[in-house]
Image 1 (cartoon, rainbow, N blue to C red):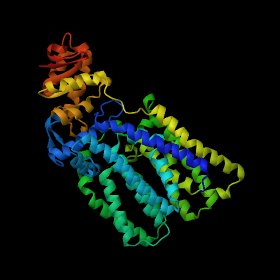
Image 2: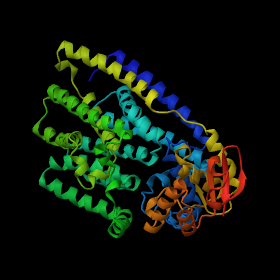
Image 3: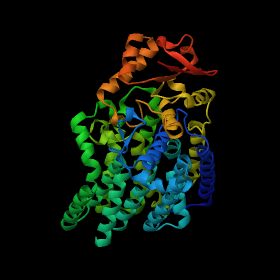
Image 4: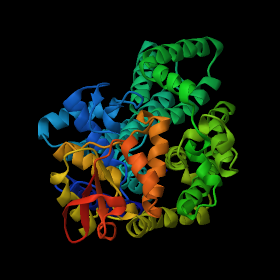
Length: 493
């Protein structure tokens, strides 16, 4: 597609907004992210710290009463990628922030490679990069929420997409198979659920190849399975022993009546529709061959199943978060958009496209600005909890409710005060018995059921509690106040 100057003005504004977001996020270098919105990044910072201190798959004493085995069932790829930055900056928060910057640089390079395959100018490839990595969804879900491994994984999705597009009508040689196996295996070790998105593209590619190529692709797939067995084999063992409960299936959030998921539900309607519309114009202006129609039928079918809310019922595929599917649809939509031939449209449609392409980046900026919070410094409540951490000398539990993110406190406390807790950021390390005790303890604290509270407290070996001042006078269930401040107190047995 040949864009007019107004499109590039919108892209320039988007670029400035994107840079503003990155500068805003740099506060995490000096202020540990503890707010309740950024509820993933603090866990990644702590796990990176643990990887450096204890080593891969070793026991970490700080979480789950010493039963946390670091990254045993979680893809280690991003952490290994960020580890040299921790060696360089000696600060886990700085390491994670600069890993984000590096990821965006790699994403730009991958976008330039994809643009080259698509025959785009460098400027258009940069525009495609910004529309993908700086749209309201990816700003909110990946950057602000702290989905750092997933953000990194999309770099490899773009690379595989570019590879398959390049060889779509070419003979498959050893260079293809080498790159295909290597990139796919790396992606699996970075983020398993995003790998499912690539599987859709691979299936599309598989469907349009001849029998000989299909056999070689199957063999390549078996090699990838073998190379990634160090991760998926323990995961299958865990699932076979403990199973996964239905409430753990993220895509089924689209079926819930919970209003907290309303944005996800809206986006999961909008992105499939966007994909359908852009495919219509891509096909209309390029007169696609049967082979191309088959190739793109796979992502279109997936989008239809999400739109109709059928995919939440499909095993394995319903384990992927709705926003991950939406990001996938955006990637394919951008391919359609940048390949629409405006010269084959009538004058009115050309004008319409040019207006929309100028407005869309501006709308994206407004939506992101008002719906996605900027970095939130520590509140007085959080500061009051942090002030008490130096006085903690045994296993800790934070009972502050939604105002203070307890798991983020456990991450911060483990790094800077060697705090230990029966909780953590990886529930696969939590036994069913301890999970029950934690659930009961929270309920008992709210209802002040002291018999249940003390029983579960002893079972979990908790010696310290940080609670809001309302639980300090008198101390809950006969505990003793060790120290206090204006908003919180530290209780001990």
